[in-house]
Structures are given as structure tokens and as C-alpha cells.
Figure 1 (cartoon, rainbow over the protein chains, first blue to last red):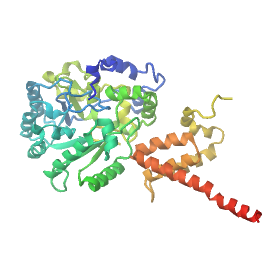
Figure 2 (cartoon, chains in turn purple, red; figure 1 turned 180 degrees about the horizontal axis):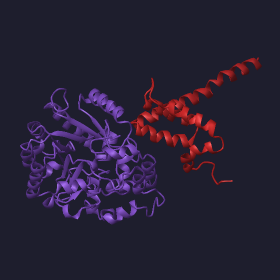
Figure 3 (spheres, chains in turn brown, red; figure 1 turned 135 degrees about the horizontal axis):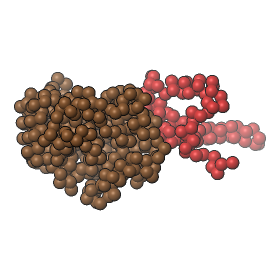
Figure 4 (cartoon, helix red, strand yellow; figure 1 turned 135 degrees about the vertical axis):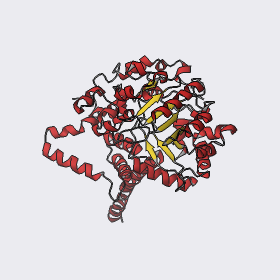
Length: 350
Length: 111
């Protein structure tokens, strides 16, 4: 199994090296700055709307090491959110009435307090609890085999990555054997009712391109996935979200090593869609890392770009009013969320 | 004279053909855009046809463009190679079917 950038000593594990490349050195120095695209739209600085989604990254540990992972997650990552900070997150949700909890990782199920966290959150009367599961974790170890029943008990909305409906492309991105384990996991989720019509148990899949190209039409790809997964494996799911790969972390490493970085950035800039700006997820989402720090989104989290208002950069100092008035920090990677039909953790936005 | 007839960067300049004759270019690009919209054929089917034709007309710009476009539209590598084989089969058939002309001529000239 390949190592994370961090444990392999890759120069990109130094955030400043990523920021330097994104800033235009040594490539793409002549590309327009993201800020310059927002200014004519009167969208700079970018401001939030109402914060509706509280996204908690409960740790970077994962059983997979995907080539495109923007978190640089893997078995060798030990960053895990403590129970005390998870409790603080629950307190914030209870006090602020933010309606959606979005739990991500790594493999969030590997946080030893994961089940307690979901159980506690389910008592808060939230509109929705999302768990971003990589699927294979369900089959990785016996202690995770009952996750579908656990998700069902707490009416969790499961969102899972599956980059393609065939083995080759999936395994090339996510590792050997991931496709077959994902299929088994999807069958077990279907088995308890997830993705089945009228069950009210929502199972959505995430497609992200298996290379240096942009995602295609979301509804067409959803039709392809539904047809092929049902025909070949009898699998059902609710929606497919297409997500653009953001040029940071391991996907940036891939772009640089495959000599695709310059072209990919040009593609993102060329595909800039002004109508996608209003719907970008940083406007209604706040992102929290394993150590309690607050970011505009999961991507800014990975670039260590904490929210601009220094008085509320940690959940210990959480202030919803200030966060809803902050200016969102942007950089060249933000072109990934505004290209084509736009991209967010909930799929397209335009 | 440039060192090479083909430069991959020229693909991005395709729209520049309007510089010398804007009216015809505008008509062409509008028509081109409409051709590739979903109709009785899906956008992916059209992209795979374009990929096959790109090989048949041996256009390196088009091969680059429609390889990426096919991937973007969710085509697998196997689908793309099957499309190329169709182009190859038609091209090969187009050569071989002229063998009938050769046979006709040979038979006419021979005792």
C-alpha cells in the first residue's frame, strides 16, 4: 500500500509548497487570479449565506490510500478528533440549530468515538446527519460489518465514493480490490434498505474523474451508473453527485508527476462558470478539522487556511454570527468548484 | 516555417480562425455546437463517433479533444478502443473493397 504524502516526506506535505505552486510558480504564472474573476461579479470578497451544514472531519486515518485524495488520508495518518472536541461539536449543533451535520474523514468510522458521536447527534433532532463512507470500511474488519444496520438505526444519510461502475477505473484510483469490496458493501447497504425506493434511507454515490479531466453531465452519468450497477450487480442507489478533483494534495502530486498540472489548471480557468459562484459550498458550510480549527471548506482545511476572523478560528470560540459575516478565503484551487456545472460535496451547483 | 506542422497548443486557438473570416466561422461554430448536443443520439455516443472519425481523418487535434471528451462523458477505455476499431475496419474495408475494381480490371485485361 502506498504511503501518504506526509509519511513519505513528499515536498507537497509542506503546505507552503502547495500554495506556491497554486500561486503560479513555476507554472501558469499568467493565469488570471480567482479573485479577478469574482471582482467583476461583485462577489469579492466572497461572503457566506446562512450556515446550514456543519462539516466535521473526525480524522485523517483511512483504510484506503486513494491517488486523488485531497485529505492525504491513509492508515499511517494518526490525526483523530478527541471525544472532548466531538462533544464541543455537539454542543455547537445544539446551541446554534445548524440543521445538518456532515461527518467526513479519512474513514470517519475509524474514529473510536464515531458511533457515540452519531448516536448523540441523532438525539439533537437535526434535519440530517451525513456520513461520508468510503464503502470498503464496511468490509474491512468484522467490527465494521454491522455499519449498515447502525446507519439505518440512526437514519444516517450515507454518501459514498465510487468513481466508476467498472473495476479497472475504480481500482486505478482507489487501490486494488476496492471495487469488489465496494460492491459487497453496497449490497449490504441495499440489504437493509439503503437506496431502495420508499425506504427513506438515502444512499448517494459520488463520482469524481479518474484522471486529469473534468466530470461530465451529472444526470447522464447518474443514468449510466444506475443502469450498469443494477444490470451487473443488482445494486440501487438514490443520486449520483459529480465532483471535480481539486488541484491540491495527492491529486496535485498526480498532476505534477503526470505532467498534467498546467493543462488541468487551464481547463479549470477556461471552464469558469460565473453562475456557479453563488452555489459554492463554502457559502453555506463550515468545516472543522480533527483539532477543532474552523475553515471555509474541507479544501481550505487541507491548505491550512483557517477562517479569516481570528476571533473564531476554533470551536472553543465558535461564534455563528461572526462566521456568517466573515469573508471567505479563496485561492487558485477554488477554480475547481466553479468549473463547468460547478462542484461541491453535494455535486453540481449550477 | 514552423519546425512542426502540428502543435498541441494550436488546438486551444481553434476559435482564432474567425480572425480572418468571422461570419463563416460564427456559422461553423454555432452549427458545430448544435451537432454535439443530445438528440436521438446521446452526447456520449456522439463523442465516441467523433473519436472514431478523428482517427479516420487522422486529425491529431481531434484525437486529443475527443479522447478527453469521451472520458469526461463517462466512456470506458474499452468503449473508446472499440470506436477506433470501427474506424480501422471501415478504413481497411475501404481499401479492400477497391480490390474488386482491381479484379475487374485485371480480368478484363487478361485472357
